[in-house]
Image 1 (tube, helix red, strand yellow):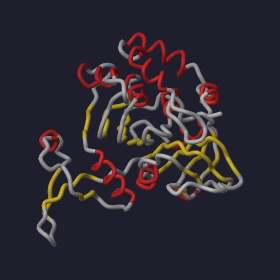
Image 2: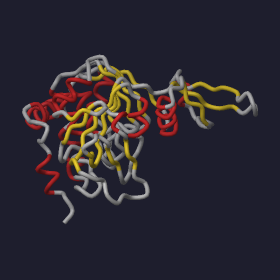
Image 3: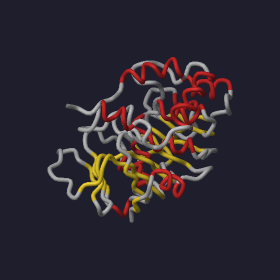
Image 4: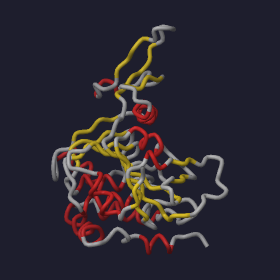
Length: 284
């Protein structure tokens, strides 16, 4: 059952060095504050899973916390490369980075397989592409019923999933709306789950047709962190800070400027560091 903790307590209790870790959120609800707390606590030797590794994984890789990244697309969305990820993979700075690349479909199916307790995901995919030549975890099987050639990849079974939701009720259930990505599947596939939320409410009230509610029993810890997804956005709370994504290209290009920014904005800040910026971005 979900336990209400501070962000620092939630991360300390549930994320350990050597873990396989999934921080999910697709454009929307990216758990930046939780990622920053992992960095502050120096939790290292991580295998990180994410459909679209962007700035938060660039920061974790650049700080030397990550040994392997399993993903389906990586970059600074709408801007360009992740310079810290490239530096680690191409030059081994600050440590060598192993990568395992998949398609979006493979990643989503691997989470669903993990959530169902299956050893692998089977789906139609990887037809006429070269990725299976460089990723030995992409294999093919023959359907025993139709003879069709199908793709197979290992199920994702992270030690811990970390996601950002919109609201939690007092019983520990969590609401997601807007672009919901694979947060539900990541939580259900994981042994433990940490969820940050914008606020606690008595009742979720009216909800959108695509709303997802994670029941309390799927969650290990909930931390109330207003602005916890900033500079990504939280539907109905604050907008995406597009300027920050553009600025990150210059900040992260050289290791010295990256470390200076991390020291000032993450290592020497608390979990509410971006909350004031998020409030400024709140829709009128």
